[in-house]
Length: 118
Image (cartoon, rainbow, N blue to C red; front, side):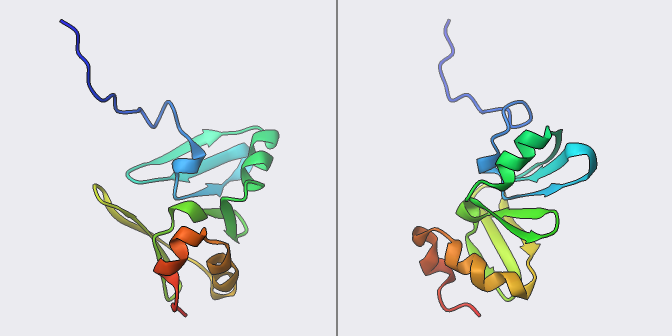
């Protein structure tokens, strides 16, 4: 008998940074990725980290924290929301000085969600 079905991807083995909501860079190349229902720490080389932080999908909100702009579903006050039908809502606080630029950089398909938010 052959089992044909949807294979659920193992996020711990096949982590794609573009699927994460945000990541934080620690010491000695340790990067912590936060996503729908996971937080995964991985050690990256300096070259891998440099490539990751230069990706235009990620916006630096603090010294060591980068938000995935393509995953933002809403911004209210100083809080960025990431919504997922299955796993609920995940949030992160963003300093006020970064909100204006962040809103301008959010992909145009998401702009209507965050329009008018101060």
